[in-house]
Length: 165
Image (tube, rainbow, N blue to C red; front, side, top):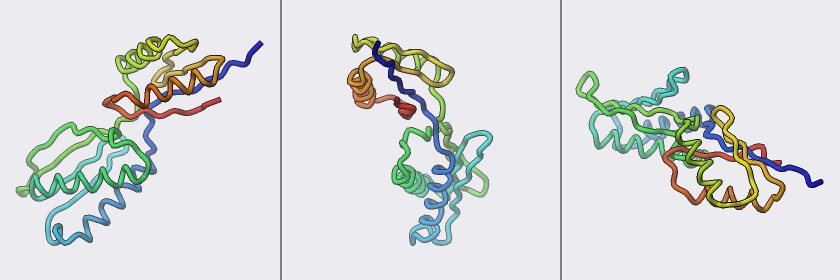
């Protein structure tokens, strides 16, 4: 009898890499000439899983966001890990942007992924297990086809593949 192979699909965010990206972005903003003497802050709230950016104007806030997203990409994370939830005026005439850290696949998104996998009509099974999806099948080629197909789709959340065996 053939052996069963499987892998997991998740949206887990590596918090240490996010911390490193924030530290690098803060360092770059401190050294950039266009930010000299201006308000600029990047704060991580691990419990609430949010990142707050504060700067003196919308243009500077956009530049700070670009720096942070660039550092996140360089650290090997998906830019979809951060999702902007609000942008508002802060105290002292500054602007604030709050980003949520996406590290779980929602139920509706998980159902959409399972539907996509079933639409391929391969001999694989997809099962939702909490905030992960386990895909199993006898053929490694079928599992790799599923991975390639899911990577080609544009979800509004990051997807990671792990426990490939």
